[in-house]
Image (cartoon, rainbow, N blue to C red; front, side, top):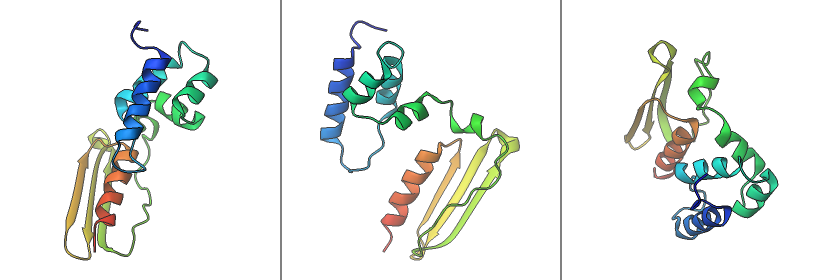
Length: 135
């Protein structure tokens, strides 16, 4: 671990991010997640959790490999769509390196199309933002 990356430094970065984030439930940035995981290798886990004010389940999830490597056999998952979305399509193509294609069409005709190797958290955040913005 670098001398500059201490638990105090990372804690200050988390606090700075919390103070500057725009949305209450914004996703913790990847670089902060990576720093928390790195700290857990050198400090007691309880100290990292308490100092950074994160949960054990969050840290555990950040320590896991990406979603694609865990869900190789998944071909369908259900996503609850509010009534403001009139049409939705979710297609997973495992033969194309787990390429995901999602199309949401709102009742006002606006479309959101997501394609590529996406993390579930990214899909949910984008979908919620899109569906929450429909009127």
